[in-house]
Image (cartoon, rainbow, N blue to C red; front, side, top):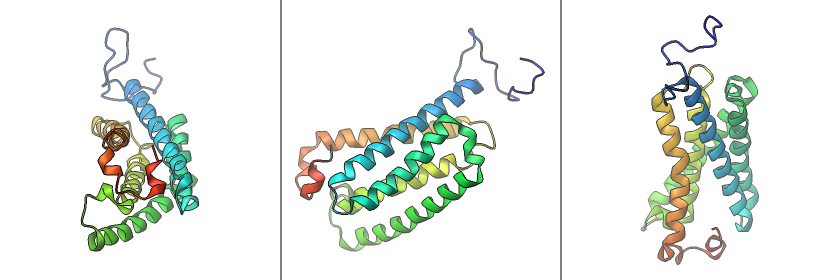
Length: 184
């Protein structure tokens, strides 16, 4: 559709013969897929909190970004909407404060790998939330670049690899509190 103004400058046209990752439509498609994967991760993270002593708080902490990211996977331009930005920024700020608090707890009271500690796993979740919302923050302003896409693919797959690692490493789970042993 030449002349329609819908093409991105500098981006190769998508066609049957030149169907590359550099194509704007393919980058957009991958961006939406990464967001849908993160929606799945945040939803699963909220679900596994059901047996946690402070489940209500953690379910809300994970469901807010799950819903925000679901909207991004459906309509990527939503990140430009004032309500989306307000909710994302507010939630990121709350997660950042929580991450600072948990970092202090871990620094002063931890002698093991942080994934062995409940606070370490909680900190990881808060950092993933803040990082992903930050990655989405200005995605409406420009085409999804290669660097953002590589980061998105890496970050969207990492939590699942960590969960697989934790599931396989039974020794790691032996020191966990009882409510954490049935997480996966």
